[in-house]
Every structure is written in structure tokens, then in C-alpha cells.
Length: 342
Image 1 (cartoon, rainbow, N blue to C red):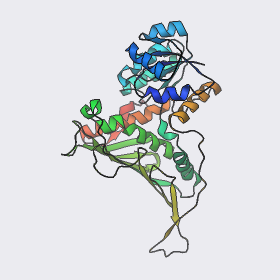
Image 2 (cartoon, rainbow, N blue to C red):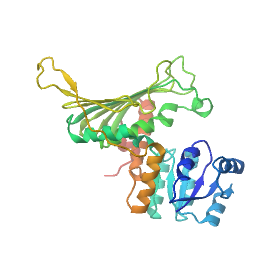
Image 3 (tube, rainbow, N blue to C red):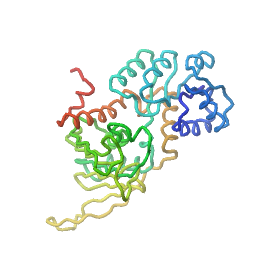
Image 4 (spheres, helix red, strand yellow):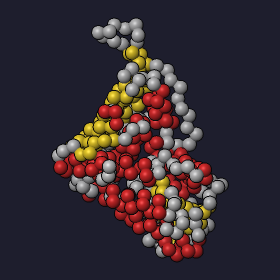
């Protein structure tokens, strides 16, 4: 399977380092509008392949099977159009697009050319995350009624993030929102969001937010986080709590989840809860490598990846719905963003 790497910024390292270790793919070329960046990346990863600054030329000369899209989000639609129309499947870095309109057009193009467009959601591919999901599915703690995720970090990026209007929601929250959908196995219906910036924040835009999502079956998902929180920092995978009908699951984002169920011998008025040992789901490969492996296996088997564009647009819609809610100070229905036609 011939892969064309498009975009040679920092994130490409996570992709190339995984792909070059596989014996079922060949990186046939690197493309970047700055050809020196492409050449430097090829040298860094000891790749013996041509480099290009013109995508059409690379496609015409290499006839790749798959495009790896690591371009900036505002260029994603154009790259998708050129690659899908050339008969290539696309494996893309997140987000699916910089707009819902762009995301819907990518889905339309994928359907039109009968090709796949998969999105990187590496936070799904984690032993603890898989275990968390399996615990919820097992029924041990009953039916979820509430899911909470906390994300507080002091992050001094410099550059474009500190100039963005909504750096937390646009640049980071997509990970946690997608994790919530994955854990619950349900679709979001609405959100109320309050976005804010503290007096001591070094970001121009709102670097903090609180979101209350309502999912199917009236399950509440509460997200609260900040990029500008001095002090103890949470895991990049967030800190989680699932409140269920028979107990609770907690996860600090670093270790394995912990499960607590009601002690049947405790007093009804003052019940005690005991930690319950659980079998955890093993994960042979995680992060970018795990997601890339599923993408490639999906292409081989003809089934769609769990991060297929048609599904991933729901996670992206959560981001844009939260931003719209904060700006308009009202609850936003997810279908307002997706423009669902009954």
C-alpha cells in the first residue's frame, strides 16, 4: 500500500515514525508547500523517497493508494477534494475540518468517490480508556446517568494558540468530546456552554470553559477545563467520573480506572461503597499507532474505522455547538449545527 505524506509540520513525526515501522505500507513521497521542510523531514526519518511542494505533481508521479493528511485544518477540504477525486483513501489528523460545512463536504466527496476518510482520535486508543468503556458496557455499575471530565493545565504554547479566539474548545476539547461519545456509545443532543478567560490568563481568547451536554437517554456530560490553570496539572487524557445506577467509575487519566459499587451489607441511610476488582482490557498498541493500525486494517477488511468521517462529524459538532452556545448564551441543539433534516 503506497502512502503519500502531505504536510511536514511537527505532527507529522507522530505519523511517520509509526508508518515507517510497518511492513505493509510504503511512504512513496513527502509533500509540503515548503519543500525544504519536506526534505528535512525525509532526512530526519531516513526516508529514501521524493519530496514535493506541489500535491498534484506528487499524485501524478507516485500514484499513491492512501493520503496521510497533516495539513492545517483550513486546507483540509481542498486536500481532501484533490486526493479523494484521484482515487485515494485519506487518513487525516484531527480535526475533520475547520467548519461543519467543510466536514459535510468531505463526507459528500467520500461518498461521491466511494473512498474512505478517517480522522485521528488517538485518545480512544488507550488500555485505560478501553477498560473504562468495557466496564460501563458490562453492567457492573448499572446505567450511566452522568459523565464528567476535568482538564486543567498551565500551557504556555506561544504562537497561534495564544492568539486564537477559543483556544481550549477549538484546539483541545475535540479529544475529550470524542472520548465522551466513545465511552457512552450515545449521541449528544444539546449543550449549554460558558466560555471565559481569567484576569491572569496569558491567552488573548477564552482559554477556559464549562460545558453541560445532554446525551441520549438523558445522560449528562459535564466538561470543565482550562489551558491557563496555574498549579497541579491534569492528564492530557483528562480526569473522569462516571456516576451510574449501581456505582461509580473514576479515572485519573494516568493509571487504570477504579470501580466502586454499593456494599450490600451497609446501612441504607448511610451506604458504603467498596472498590471492586475488575478485569482490564489489554491494548497491544495505543495512541497514534493504535488509531493508524485500525485505519489501515479498516481499509484492508473493507469495514469503516471507528473514526470514520461520517461518525466523527458528531464530535466536531459538539465543539461548534459549544462555541455557539457560549456566544449566544443559550442551549444549542446539536442538530442546529448538523442541520439535520427530518
